[in-house]
View 1 (tube, rainbow, N blue to C red):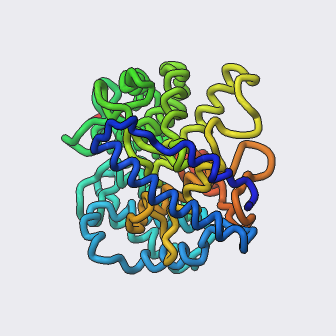
View 2 (view 1 turned 135 degrees about the vertical axis):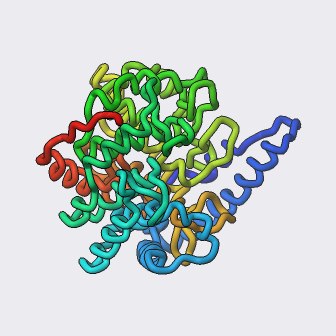
Length: 406
């Protein structure tokens, strides 16, 4: 059997049992587990002749991503208002795979993202559209991933700060766009770009920590807004935002930990986004990426509280799910078996794979071939660690704008 791979005969005992009380949800769960078990069984035969299995299909994924930079099928038309996201998902995935672009392409992408920047600050989903916090986060991450001075200088920091003021609510929350919805994504996106580009001020985020804490639910995770259901994406945003503010103590960390460790599926090995939902490859990061943040918080409280060799989830099981069940043989990664490949799931599934491979110290914990190792990510921003540190160092040399709300 390949290194670090679980015994599949043993984990079959973890299959879901409906106790003779089938529901629509239980039927869907059992259907997914059947598709996963088929791939696990196939892998157990394959590993008998390939001791390096499972293998990350690096070349296939890189080819899929590079083609997607210049050509996307019709199915992506619905993402016309998310074009900076497409750039970020592709660039970050290539970064994790240690793939580089030629300087000419780097410059072209930076210039395109510049066209998405609003004259009033922030970035829009495409040229000529309205500024929005989500594509602003994506554009800043993409430009930091490109990592050139030209890319950094695309960002109009003073106008970006003014944009953040314009979508800030008096209670410390942030609208996604002027007159738009208020949810926890907004405050995370605002904090991430503010910290990365060194435009953060205490006044801009006054009371944001208390608003974020109010989104923690009775389950322990975070919801999009107070009173809603805990969700993996929102939970990451909430914990990361509190970490960026240095206010993690405002939430119930033990309750959060209990909730998130129970989101890893016992049989599949991947994560679900919410209680009683199906496994999904993208939560490899949205849930898995929270564990490095949790680890730091718990160590600060008591350095003997947690292991100093691994995160508080089953890292090998997550890697197995990704490598065995989520790879499209033609390149790209998927939500779960039988689902089509797409750029979004490629990005966040690879991001989760990187988190599962790397710990704060010691050698990487890589399932399968050593060639499977990805570049490490900065878990708060989900940008490559090197790119994030380079961007932080560059922008820290610049003065912090002191704009005021209009």
